[in-house]
Image (cartoon, rainbow, N blue to C red):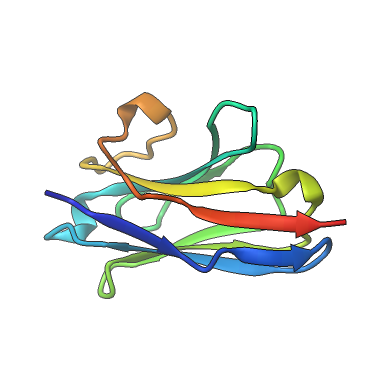
Length: 124
């Protein structure tokens, strides 16, 4: 059973930064593609970014491109989401997800494991 635990959410002013972390219990971790999704109040969950098993490939939603950076440390079994230049519209619960794959995975339905989410609130 793979377990994911997000941390690092909080309240930040517009223009500020936050770094989210996702600790993964998978063994070994290197065989998992990872992604971040978010869900704003009253909206469906949406894709934010994804990274392949060794960090060689990444993909971003247009809405966060140039502001957010995904990375991973396989030795620490952790994925990070660095969020800069935050906007009020980035306010959401952020979820990390894992899929046992060596590909870059962007489709929500392809992910098998999910964390409980961490709240990010950006004030104007």
